[in-house]
Length: 228
Image 1 (cartoon, helix red, strand yellow):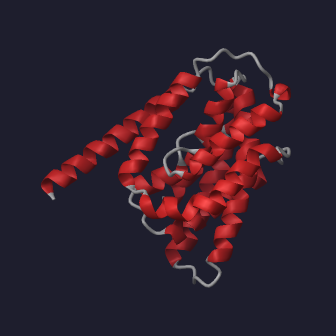
Image 2 (cartoon, one colour):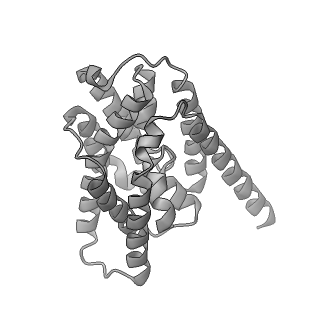
Image 3 (cartoon, rainbow, N blue to C red):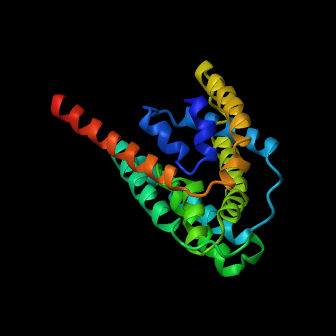
């Protein structure tokens, strides 16, 4: 799971959604895995420029809704979110590429920030939601990827620190330590993919992958329910 965490954090496919679908039900483990990736990406990628309006909606929503969302959502909702995220990414990527990153204004940052807040739902994907919003606003793919990282990295780092503080009395199990270092290593490797991702002619492969993953997961749940 730690090895999956790194690439899934860099790509618009939802890292938390992948951990849930792989069978993780240990929130502490997920925090340590996210921490490993966050450290790797902060070390490997350029320091993101400040975009306060992209951070504010996610911060407010996270503090207010994170607990209720995590308690009520399970594998089925994650699979549905993957399908919905894949479909919206495909639709958004059909928008014309006409705007550079320097064209981003207050309205753009606020809308992308609101999209990022939706990623509190596991399976939506923080990276996927912000890229989708940026492409709907007409930003080029390279600009969308850059804006997404600038919006997401501070939130990922801040949320991880907050969750680790909440777990300060939790003794790290060997699995947590292994997850942290596996996610750290895979995150360092995945960070090298970023320039290639920004040069892709289409986000369609990621959208199709997410739809297929969600459908396979739902199919597996139906089969397990039938035989259970």
